[in-house]
Amino acid sequence: MAGATGRDGHGALQLDGISLRILTPNAEVLHAVMGMLVPACSAVEPAAAVQWTLRVEEHRTGVGDEGDLFQGRLLLELPYGGRRLAVVGMDDGVMRLVAAYQRGARPVVMEVDARQRVTRLLVRPGDGVGLRWADYLARVFFASRLLGSGWRMLHASAVAVDGRALVFLAGRHGGKSTLAHRAVRNLGARFLADDLVLIGPSGTVVGWPTRVAVPAQLAGDAAGRRERRVVAGVVRERVLFTPAQHRATLGVEYSPPAPLGAVVIVDGSGAAEAGVRAEAADAQTLDRAVAGAADVPQQLLYVSDPLGLMGGPRLADQAAGAAPLAGLLAGVPAAVLRVAVERLPQAPVWQAVEGVVSGLGRGR
Image (cartoon, rainbow, N blue to C red; front, side, top):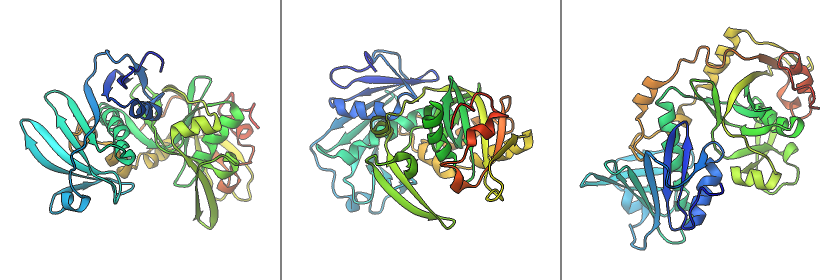
């Protein structure tokens, strides 16, 4: 990030030729946004040509209580955490909104000037929760444009091995996150994502920034928020990090966007007594796995721009521009890994996959 941020917190991000400038008097805000979006995006010089500007400012005038602001207004409620937005005015070409990042949070104000291609985020001094809208808006800027220009979002994990993306597909709680974190530890892979990836028309894989959930067996004693659930009768413990915390706490190296190199589909059905084995995936099996991974309506809504907050294409335009799913991950080695999910943290998965996807057998 050297040379890509100004002393007063000005910076810019770029991905696939799309650029966003961030202007703020608070350098910590910029570093938080950069910590979330780099290296999925590249940090570029603040003076670079950009399509949109996000201004993040503190303001001292109150905007009322959450209940008063949202009472009687048409609301958009986003998935995950009760994030809410409401349009409160349209004056001189500027759309004005109030937004609460979570239930009970202080409202913030957003002002969208589409003619000037600027969005202002106004947050009361000391409101750390309200400032979290900044990286949300930055992610919306990039994701909505990519999804409207032929990219697809998949519920998948991915790492980069020797500069090429290894993508893991599985059903819900099927072990793809475990494989991504094991690949970092066992194969010296660079981390892309453990939950969502974006696939470009040319086969570029971008690890989309979300919170990172590391299986407790792989996180050890690392400090982080711990989550314990019972899934299909099996206790599942994970340690949750932001991307910046993940890098700092566990020393994980992240990868910028990488070309697609191979695909592993995890199949745990009927595998409890069968040990670990892998076989080549045929085109139909791969397409079925991709179709299941692409069924992410909540995630798509969360990263879309239905209100035009960052000038992005609406959902209908994104759907019209989406690339076909059939053949999306074709053209590279693809394996079906058959192993019981509860065995994934220790099973010799890389040796099993090596016969189909070369270059992985050096792992344990």
